[in-house]
Image (cartoon, rainbow, N blue to C red):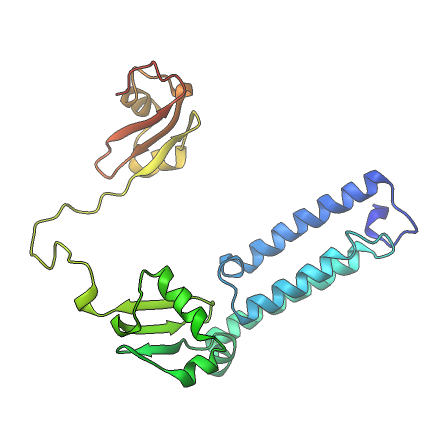
Length: 238
């Protein structure tokens, strides 16, 4: 366990063990912080990610630095991060500080230069973001806002939106979500339990194919199983 402490030099095995411990420790730290910290970075997420990266990186590259101190500091920062998120949910002022509201950039086809300057965005960058949303003209935008996560939300005027079956009052089929039930020859047992079926039912559904030959198969809400990819293309598909 000497690789936890400061050393004059570390053996190759010591470096490997320190790397493994650091990697596993960061996995648990990220798990504690939740999915928010690995999605679009907001103000608080950016600060914690930048800080943790520097704290844990140094002892993984410098044998004179102990790993124990960095791990204690990381745990402390994770606890502070979780506490700050909890407080931001309870205290409106903290919520506004950590998660500021979206900044309106375009309203009814008109650009708000003051808010554009507040968001510190050049007009060229705004047009790049509009093109990503397939919008080539600001006059077509009903509303656009710069979100705290660093993305642009764009809503075009109804006159420029695609016509939907609802607009034409046409009958439509209900949404039918398909999920992978076999991946690389392995059943998704959690999904089988969710739909109230067992492995024998699934093997019957994919006959005459063998389970090990199915790379991908999906099931929908109507419990219809469809095989998409098999290892032996000569085998007839169901």
